[in-house]
Length: 181
Image (cartoon, rainbow, N blue to C red; front, side):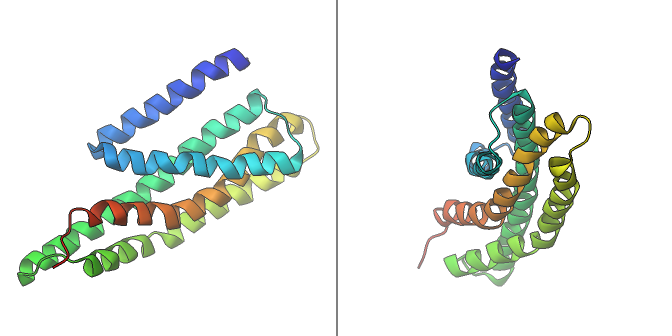
């Protein structure tokens, strides 16, 4: 089973990269989202350590699910950042002004601010649904708890990353295209 998992995980990541590229058509945006994946996994490993769980197939499945949800949250954030950036460019064009870093910073804050509540609600729903599974003691709880643990820990760090790291990475990327006069 571990051998299969060593095959399935890279294939899963490759599929995620392919789908992200098909959506954004830009490797930089794909890299921004994928750059947050290892950081999102830190929360899962942290909780596994605290619960004293060993790596197993169940834990691997939990990490695969966490990767999917973390990428989904990142995509939602990036879509709104792109939308806010395009609105900023359109406003600057209408006013005959050149985009500045301060207007970019405002656009990134605005775009990220629109996604705080949906991201928090998604994470709260996932954590709220998985904590009872993680702490249950009934039949099958050994396996289900090990699937849920990486997701609960990972969702905590994924939310922090989606709300902080992605907007900062996006801002730094777009700053290169804006000249400061």
